[in-house]
Image 1 (cartoon, rainbow, N blue to C red):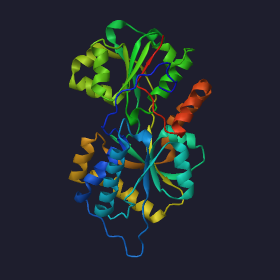
Image 2: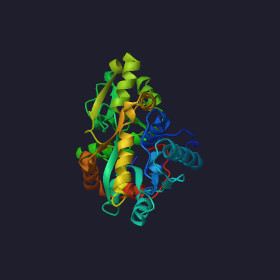
Image 3: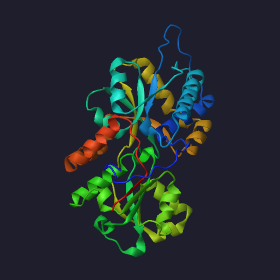
Image 4: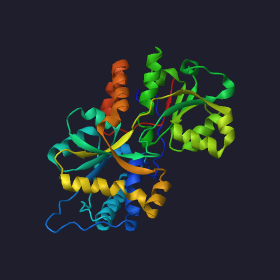
Length: 337
């Protein structure tokens, strides 16, 4: 959560890759054989340098992350005819991103919208790729509770147990929750709730509420809809207590000054993958309908949410900014005395 917990219980590291945008790009690489491209003319072989921040991953070993991204870069270079640096970069937060962009050592970076917000003009990006589903790049966050409890607002969750889904698409979920609490004059989540548990499996997060092991959960609307579809009893017995505005949680930004020709080719190739049968299959596996270019205005609602958080919770937002600017390991459970 954005507010530092009073007590932390650290889980053992997991080796599961949890990168929504990286998974999308991985799907592109896997599907590359199914979509041909014209060869790049000799003499025009500028190299594409890509990178990701650690925030795009959840509980992943650094060596595994590097190996996965390297395999992606190699495949993109060979199959899509996009000359790509075989050693992609991993960044410890927004400060490292800003330094690399200013130095021109990276051309496009996958990062959370929160990290992009903290850059605040320190690094310039002019084009953006977003993961979209049904032509929508946004996520909505939900507070879900048992219908039978008759709760009417977040104030009713004082001292209750909360489970939070941990995923890169959830990057703005805790921020929205803090804004929701602050708007009602309630204390930060670490004080308001009796226990906050962060879990990487959607099913466990939702079913913990269903089976009364926790009192509420914070998940994406798509995730909750999927669980309700798989188990109709979930939809009947659980209800939405509060919902966030639609926001873009992560992005893939291209730095200003990077080769216009190569940039356009990369965006065109990535945006067309869903049109091939192999591409459709790969994107379906990762629950992404398409990768598409969107204007920077697509980020407006997310940036407004972050600005409101900074205004309503200035002390807590300073901690969040520090976390986003430099890599920081956060425990998965906080307990309020």
